[in-house]
Length: 107
Image (cartoon, rainbow, N blue to C red; front, side, top):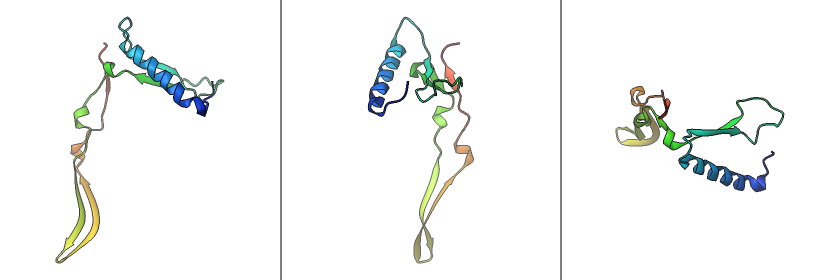
């Protein structure tokens, strides 16, 4: 089904409503839903062109508390009696952990 610009918002709202309903439906324990992208050509058999919705209740992120970098910012350099604009941002590699893993509560 082609994406029609006039219906784009309506289609999004329908998908959002269905996802919200399924995420709270007590009779089936779903971690998320997987469905074909509207941007996928109809004749394509490429399985990587999919939309994935992972429900919040079913996921967690390892090391999520360390997702921010700490930085020191200086906007001006000072030489004797003169200050001039020379922005600089410094960080340290130890302040940030790039290894994130998505975890499911289901085993």
